[in-house]
Image (cartoon, rainbow, N blue to C red; front, top):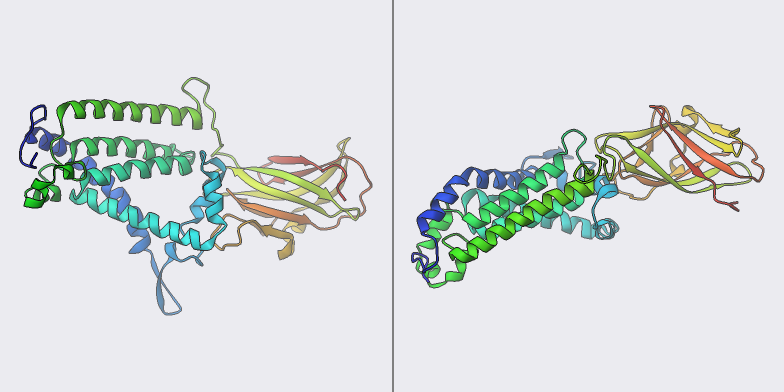
Length: 362
């Protein structure tokens, strides 16, 4: 089959050209989304630091390094926490992953905008959107932003893959070359007519995939399909998971804290801490001033990077961004006799987080 011929059982080139024309705006928008994501990091976020222009989103040592989004997203990721944690443990892997993602985004965006290797770009776009769903789909404190972007991207990519680039694309020029006409397989990477039966089956399969991806991801993340509305990971209110609480005989309290829910645009603010016994009586307490005065070694963040989600002291108390994990030590508040105790942290909005002291802890 040449690129200009139509085999029996194939739709005419004109049919595909019209379908591609109908999706021209969709192709451009999907391409521009990825172009925009990559170009913001590569070209448009430069700042002069010590006389050198640096792309801040790609500068590992800058607070705005793009991998910060991974630490914020960790609490609600679907099935990929292990690979993300492994990536975050190795700075070289972090940098390589960020650059690889950026280059792929840029290539896919440009290819879709200009219609070059349109089907290959749409196929890649499909899986980029699936990956975005797995990592960020739970986030979006106003309109389910990340979920909406991912499911829309999957549907748009599917339609573009089926239609190809059409006449308004660089693929159209490529298809007129002798090389393209000698290699019919290029149709699956670029554009052009597909066998009618293949197209029918592929269209139904992709439609079913889009429906399943949309409904199942919505149910898993938010409910409201076969169960009441409930977020798998709450993106409206912060939560701090407290574990491994220990109390020394002198009254120093050490614990693990993990902000495992809440909007990534803010932080959980802790303004008071108490150690209470089984009867609810406070045996030790730390007010906002005491928490704000914690020495630097009292908060050991799990991610030692300037850009990562972290706990830090504030004017009153301390705060933790979504995804922050740290070992925190509260100073000695006086001798504490042996017994059963509970640590209580109180937020600035009145929310409280509790954890029982580990039995037998020193």
